[in-house]
Image 1 (cartoon, rainbow, N blue to C red):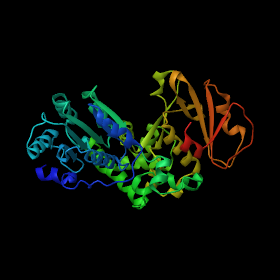
Image 2 (image 1 turned 90 degrees about the vertical axis):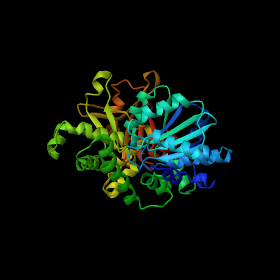
Image 3 (image 1 turned 60 degrees about the vertical axis):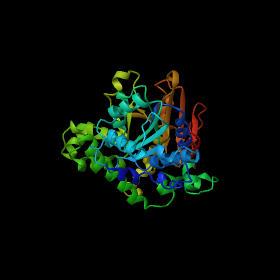
Image 4 (image 1 turned 30 degrees about the horizontal axis):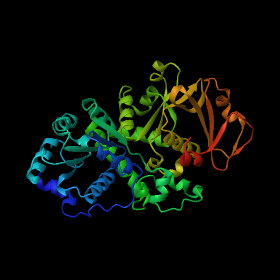
Length: 408
């Protein structure tokens, strides 16, 4: 790292209009309000959801608010050797400024901070020394490293998650009219990243570039993965058959891998926002971790990693529902299954079954209707044009389009 590296990344020092990004994610308003608080603001989420753009939009807002441009520092460690430290960055910036941090107010944005060794320890030192003078924003694409950082920054760091575009954001970015929403639903599923919604990239190649970077670079660097090809194989298994219950012993035998390796590798996929792990629900919380688990792609655009036409409509629908509700639990007992269990405050339990069929009969959701878990609410999610072949007064019916546009 050099002073020139720092100058190269801070275009706003030389051009106040450097960050002219007009479209804003919904999270922008929340993050802008964070400027009023002393604590460190952390931003996490999958790669390419727009975290860096959000940061630069906040910088543009600060400049318009007449904050001295040299008092705003941005630096990304994404392509910088991790031996370079926050201490060196701050020292070199101080030289550029020609003044110390106790004289004025400063705002520091550190992007892809997980690339810095012992970043939390270094950040804690600066926060404790200059909390009244320096406001820190940090971002990372690897959630586990941010979580580890929180252990050292207890009471000092508030984290915000930025996910893929929701349906309303997609319509805005892609300039689709917000009428006849069902016309764009399928397109949305495969274009949930800003660059894809803006039609700036080939969706298959773009998705592949993200996944390859996570598996063959991030996973090796952050998690010491020594067999990225195995990690890639595991991810493709989930993408090709989402929602399957994974048996580590059987899968290890099929792949010729160590049984003890697989849980770690699946954890890496989960912490890298490539897959979502869903636990088999039990009233006994101690049993939940030991029971079987299902895995889904973290969001449906990841289906572009293989040929989308290979994806079954039922599995695609189930995946987008898991994404929308941020699924944590399903229930399976002796092959009798409820797709998702949602636990709300005061242990209020919702059972949710997904049926992507044109005609749905009572036996399709028999176990949900039996309600042996004493669920407080029962929901059936269908395709927009599904026909229900029975009446059930205790059952709420939602189309998948209703779910992704309005929620539960």
